[in-house]
Amino acid sequence: MPAAPSILTDVARDFPDGLRDESRRTGTADGIAFPGSSQEICALLQQATQAGRRVTIQGARTGLAAGAVPDGGLVINLSRMDRILGVSFGPDGQARVCVQPGVTLQALRNFLEGAATDTTNWEATSREALATLRTQHWFFPTDPTETSASLGGMVACNASGACSFAYGAMRRHIHRLTVALADGDLLELERGVQQATGRQFHLSTRSGRVLSGPLPAYDLPQVKNAAGYYAAPDMALIDLFIGSEGSLGVITEIALTLSPRPPITLGVVCFLPDEPRALDLVAWLRNPQPQAGAPRPVAIEYFDRGVLELLRAARARGAHLPPMADHWQEAIYVEYAVADDATMDACSAALAGWIETHGGCADDTWAACDDLGRQRLKEFRHAAPEHVNLRIAERQRLHPGLTKLGTDLAVPDAYLRPVMAMYRRDLAAAQLEYVVFGHIGDNHVHVNILPRDMLEYAQGKALYEAWARQVVAWGGSVSAEHGIGKLKTNLLQVMYGAKGVAEMRALKRIFDPATLLGVGNLFPWEK
Ligand SMILES: Cc1cc2nc3c(=O)[nH]c(=O)nc-3n(C[C@H](O)[C@H](O)[C@H](O)COP(=O)(O)OP(=O)(O)OC[C@H]3O[C@@H](n4cnc5c(N)ncnc54)[C@H](O)[C@@H]3O)c2cc1C
Image 1 (cartoon, rainbow, N blue to C red):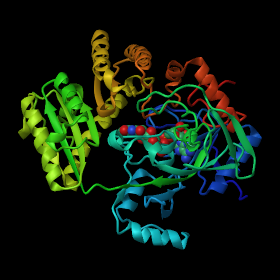
Image 2 (image 1 turned 180 degrees about the vertical axis):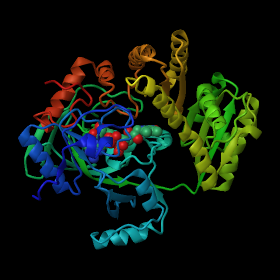
Image 3 (image 1 turned 120 degrees about the horizontal axis):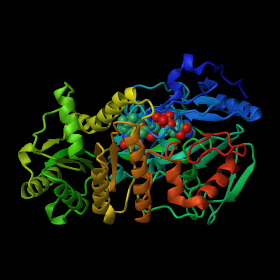
């Protein structure tokens, strides 16, 4: 076992960013280490276990739930573990890429688009597979908007994004993981290999120990979900670690399954006069009429009038955004992945026809199928969370206790209109400033409350919890993609009840008996 890497002990001075993430919460730590290999991670974990020292795992710190914000103890920051380790093809011909956890989404994309990578330590079969990969068209569909996110962090949060409407969340694209446990032992998990028997599991570590016990007994909601441990009868045990938010082990290696890149991607921003018509468009897009010749889209994203106003104001202050006519109150972004020009034309014609008959205007619709045009549409989509964050940062200067209050709730299809009506009713009654945007195809919009002071902040938090209760009663999730972290532990309790949370704690103790990893994530730390 190699020596553990050196630990910087004055984190506030030497790496102050290591005390916070994109939730804008700041923590404390008495050391931070930047390991370069799995062995170094294991050595750090062994030391920490012997000393009874808590460990917080950090990827790129783009998380929004403070999961990577330390609460004392040691931070293991994985940004140096940024190597692509190899390429292979599965028996079904699907391409796979093996990476260290600190590889960012952007670096993976660059690699898949042809950027050179150091293959010195690759096996010969992997180099041959890379040569084949270069002649084919593959991509990685999970896109949590922020491309500086690390792949380890994306696995740990079961991240998703716009195209998860068609491609599913991160979970669907993970073939194999290596996980370092709190005591420095390793687990190898491969999809299709380690399965639970009913709600019981057994796993052998690399050193030969057997870890076993019951899985939580709760049923998961039938919606997009990133809240708490995945648990289901006969489940693939790799799924326990996807979405575990740094609380079960350190993900040290990931084999990702790639998807065939569609020949044509068409992006369209449709502007509409009001919310009812925006919701009608969503319903129509989800159930395309076969005779129109347009397939189901891969992404359906929503922007309410508050977002459009925020972006118009940002543009007036010089932000690089296209002009938007004042009379449009709502917008829907639709993305199609199609095989040929004829299908693309059918999509455009079907959409233009619908817009014209429902109060929109085809001439005010933005569409692009080339890289540059789609990049502009993407910038427009990404501008919403960025400008919300800037607005919150301004207000934090006056009220340092404020954090972003962005919801992450998802409901089944039948409850999209009721949930939107609930948000509008309650926000109007409370007279809070807010914007709504996000993944409406999955009935998963982010209500971003923009509190002007701490009183409004408290009001917003109370609303969030009340909504969570209603959403759970409708069969939804309290966190569809950002995770629970340290900011939403109350909502995990709302979703699974005291019994479900106790079952999660018991599961954690099987992998981390001294409760040292990701302390405070998912459930409050019990001293
Ligand atoms: C502008 C903006 C937009 C966003 N939009 C989306 C979106 O659309 N969809 C979405 O899903 N997310 C979104 N996010 C959130 C964020 O990008 C994701 O949660 C991402 O997966 C976090 O990755 P990270 O590397 O930054 O992880 P971090 O923030 O560093 O960590 C997140 C959690 O994962 C754990 N962790 C990190 N690495 C490991 C590892 N190797 N092993 C074990 N645990 C680990 C940490 O302990 C922590 O609990 C957005 C963020 C921003 C700033």
